[in-house]
Length: 292
Image 1: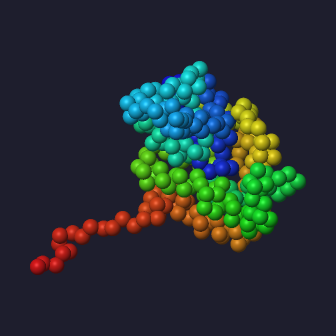
Image 2: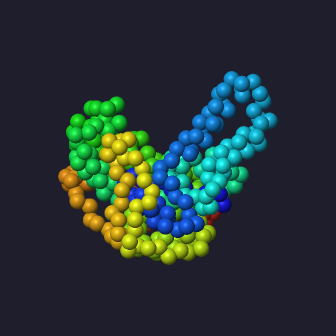
Image 3: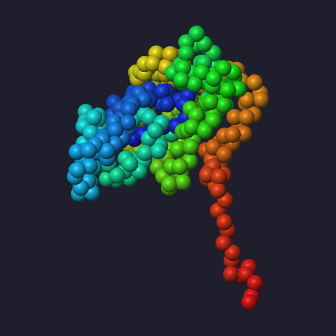
């Protein structure tokens, strides 16, 4: 593995399309959603809590621990050149990855779509597969009994949409903003080659001419695991943006728009303060101070 790049972002925001595009480049290797970070954290947990490891001075083993975790990552992707590992959890694990790899060069591609369209897409798929129950519904049946409750589940604290935004906010607050490249689903569909050129520039790779007129699906995820509630299929052929078929009443469109206004302002206008929810105090100038 020569380079590792991470793919994260909102659900239903074009990551499957992006990975299928990337996969047409013979130098690049995108993954479907993986549990690589879970394996790494599982190893870290074992080293932290296993009684045999606890019997050793692990502060003296730090270089061995780093080499072991790094060895897994490099070994897992040993046959690949430029890897794009897809998992939304990467955004909250940049610091850990840096410690494992021993550098801070890894970049994140964060896919964005208007949260209204994301909620709408999830709800549409829920309605299309109403005869099947998804995993979350089986464990929290009351959270899915009404449209109001379903949307509250999607956008509530720790929800399917709110969690990626929460960990993005933390990454920005931790100072990793310059390592995150935002890809808008709208732009990816309408200005595909331009977006891909910018991705190449961001990660320091030579440009590549992508076939945007006859894309075939080449990365796959088993959607039956979630009872087909979250499909990872693309429309093959020419890449085209389709206006979403809205199933949400205006009331909920307004609720989602209001909740994610800080995210949208950050993505499109660079409003970091609004996104982080902080006000940076202005320092008084000496000339403003009253003389004693």
